[in-house]
Image (cartoon, rainbow, N blue to C red; front, top):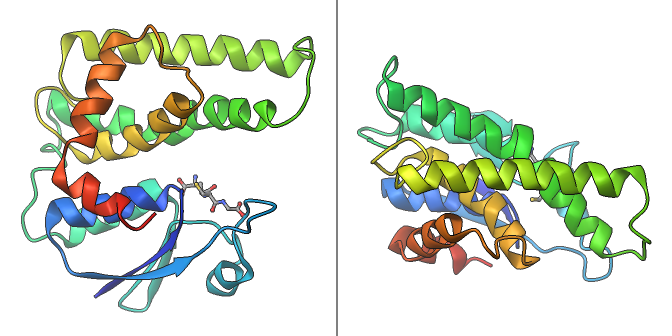
Length: 202
Ligand SMILES: N[C@@H](CCC(=O)N[C@@H](CS)C(=O)NCC(=O)O)C(=O)O
């Protein structure tokens, strides 16, 4: 059975959500963020030298990086339509957005979150860079979702699981105001029962 190392309020929600969508058995080992620093506790460092969530353990393998874990789990699933068929247009959209979630969107969204925790006058090079990247990324995402329901086209896929968790961080700091298609999309994702089950883990 797949063991998921879950850190509260983190990207490991992606993995719990995916496993719920696939109705696969799994066990969860909980790790609670330090209340002061908000970082992972020492228990996660004992599992993996990076001390980051998610991490899974299965059949003697230990895997980090949420995108890689998603692919691994989809490889284990007996039957799944959460990854479009290779070579199709939907597959390449799926691939693009799975990578976009961590490769492009995560940096400005998380940097923005961290910058809000400190006092800044807004004139540093970093502020301009992050604001520009956020605007570019969120405009592109909103335009995409104005013409299609999901990131890989008209069917829900694991790319939606990758993207939703990053977009929710943007939502939590009011970056989604005036982005009607992203707002519609997030409400749709948050209505899924597998999502709601994954969120019960904190
Ligand atoms: N790119 C990695 C990012 C992993 C990551 O940064 N995880 C965060 C939680 S969202 C974490 O474990 N932070 C705790 C810490 O750094 O102490 C992935 O997608 O899995």
